[in-house]
Length: 114
Length: 111
Image (tube, each protein chain N blue to C red):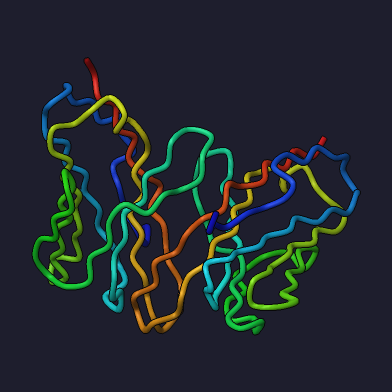
């Protein structure tokens, strides 16, 4: 199936640990994104990559480091996890065509930091 | 002032009625506008996009855009219980290359 996929779906970990979330899309898109949705359901952009190049880096702690090995993959590594990092993290992708920026979301990774 | 404002709801409409969801945005540079539906515990799903002033219809959904008033709306005709979800408005600004999401309106369609 064509889609945006993420692993893992759930991640429960202790404060201070380091964890990674992986994202893959097979839609042929050239831009990928990471969003964070907090407990109040507010969805906020964190990063975006276009053709492996970082183009958006919102005000995110530098404990968060995205990596895009190729156009189809965007991973998110988080160091020294904190309680406030608990949220759902969504990956998304789009084909960059001027402002026709229809973004398609993955299923999300629910991160719980204890 | 929030960048994208939506009434959080819940907006309750009876089955078969028209649901009207509204959104205002502050960035006049916004070029395209998207409506996403998000069921509880699921990811946002793109349901409508609109790029120019006026109305755009797709099945039971109609998106309306008024750039002068910085206003975009979504009408859902013949509302069904399966339409019960949170609807997120998201303007796109090309210069910033990003979508900015509103906090969403929770819609409840009652039997």
